[in-house]
Image (cartoon, rainbow, N blue to C red; front, side):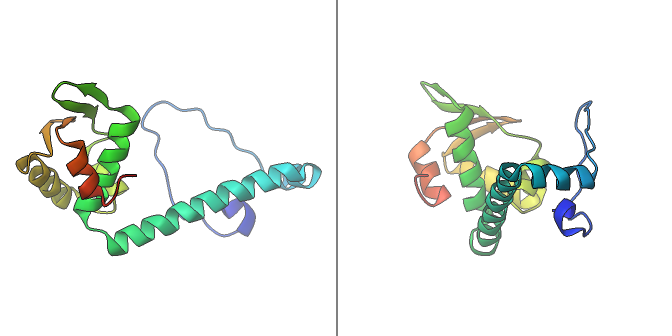
Length: 147
């Protein structure tokens, strides 16, 4: 966004591993968009998807509990990267507790309480970063809907 509205950055990032970065001067992006309007349209589409995702996140943060937001994240992760076993669906938590908490708009302590509650209820078992979803239907219920 700062590329187009000339305002400051709204976020920051830190590389978790070695990274190569590419810097393109604003005037080059402006010229590219003028020469190739399809590039500008693709950028607009990407920004629109991000605004939609942020609007959805804002709604979730305002209206959904930590438990529900965690349920959605775990359900999405189970469907995306889970491995079916006779006991349930195994998956690796997608980050540290702090990273997961940040993704769902909370801090570590409420996240840990929600994980502990779901484990105590028999929905899943947690072993460090490994998780076994024992009852996918109940996790769907926690998430608020079969997504």
